[in-house]
Image 1 (cartoon, helix red, strand yellow):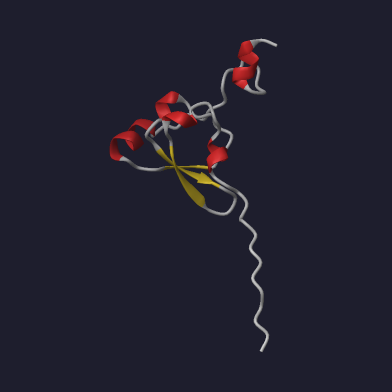
Image 2: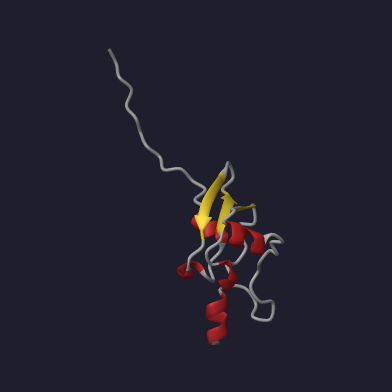
Length: 93
């Protein structure tokens, strides 16, 4: 197995990482404005560090601030889509 195949995950090396071109990326970085997106499969690139994203989780937008450790992962990994189940007993009088 080639080392590049491990780094890329399941995507072909010749395709490169999947990312969406955000036209207001520089403006969001300068003014600390969050970018609203539904592109959960977008790979986080090194130039996204310090930018706040509002990632759609299926119901609403979850705030995600990109740090150095997130580079190479997908935006959707940091916006949880499922709620934790809690059982609440009903009171019987």
